[in-house]
Image (tube, each protein chain N blue to C red):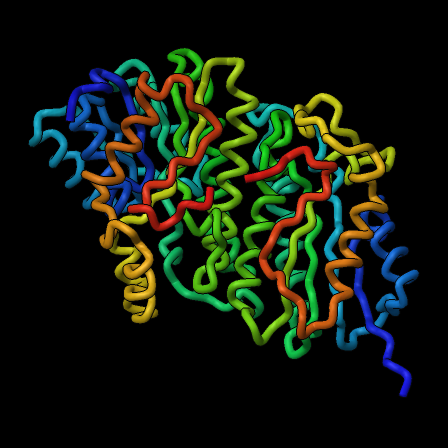
Length: 255
Length: 209
C-alpha cells in the first residue's frame, strides 16, 4: 500500500482483533502513526508490535469506549505521542454483538450494552476528538454495517445501533463540515471472529450469506476493508463526507 | 353477520401527526384502543420534544445525550416489545412514524436523528424477524417540520427539511400522513404486500434512494 497517510495520526478503537486489527494494520501500512486501542491489553499490544515489526509507528492505549476517561486518554495518547490527531476511527462493538436474539423478548439490558459501545461510544469518540480533528482538518470514521441499512432478522439490536450510527454520521457531517472536519461511515462484510461466532450460533447463516455475496467470499479485514478506511481518512477523500461506503463484496447494492 | 370492528392503538396522540392518525383511523371505523386486548393496528407517533432542541453535539453533555438520543430509542423498543404480544398471532400492522430527517441527517439534531434511525432499523429488523407469521411493520416518514409543528418545538436553527417538496403543502400535512397510514393498514390482511418498507410522505422532497 502506498503511504497516503504518511505521518498522519490515527486512533482506532477495538483494534485488538477482527476488523479493528485489520484497520490498524492497514493504517500502519499506509504510513500512519497508529494509536491502537482496546480493552484487551495483551491482544492490543500484539497488534502494535505487529505494526512496528512491519516498520510503522504505533502505540497502545487501553480504552473501554464505555468509559469517557478512557476515550479522552486515548486522544491524549495520540496528541502526546505524536503531536496531533488526524483521524478518529470508532470500530469497537459490544462483545455480544454477534449473539442472535429475539427482538420481542430480549432484555433491555442487552440493548443497553449495544448502545453503550456503538452509540454512546460514537458520541464519546466524536466529542473527545473534535478539537484535535478541527485543528488538522481531520476525519471521523465510524464502522457501521450492512445490517444498519437493511435491518437484520438475526441481530435486530445490532442492526438498530448500526443504523443509528449512519444517522449520527450524516448529521455530524453536516454539523462539522463548515469547520473542515469530515465524518463518514464504513459498512464492511468481513471474515472476523465475530462473524465466525455468528455462523457457529446459526450454521445456516454462512451458506445464506455466502450465496448472496457476488464476490463469493468475506472480506479480509486488513486487505479488503482496511484500504477503504485508509481512503476515507486520506486527502483523496477530501470531498467526501456524510457517506457510508459499503465494502461487502457486492452483498449490499441497494444504498 | 356484522363484521367486528378493527382495533387500533396510537401512541403519541398529542402530537400533530399522531393526533391526525388517531382521528383518521376513528373516522375510518377503527375502535381506538384503551384496553389491553388484541390489536389490528399499532402506531408509534411519539415525538421526544426535548430531543428536537437544536444544539451542536460538542455542547451536549453525556446525560443530555442519553436523554435526547438513547431514551427515545429505548422507549420505542419497550413499546414494540409490549405491543408484540398483542399483535403477534394476528395479521396486524405496526407503523412507526419516523421523519425523513433520520435518512438525510440534520446539523444541530445529531441525538434526535440518531434516535429515529435506530427506531427505523429496529422496525425494519422486526419486519424481518417476525416475518410471515407475525405482524407486518411499516415506516411512514413525514417531513420533520410537520412532526414538530405543535408550537412546543421547531426545526428552526437546524438544516432539516432542506430539500423542498415538489407538491403542495397539503400533500405532506399531518392529515396527508394520516391518510397514507389509513390506506396502508386498511387493506385486507391477506393482500397486504408491504413489510419493512419506508414510505416518505413528504411531498416528493426526498425521493430516496
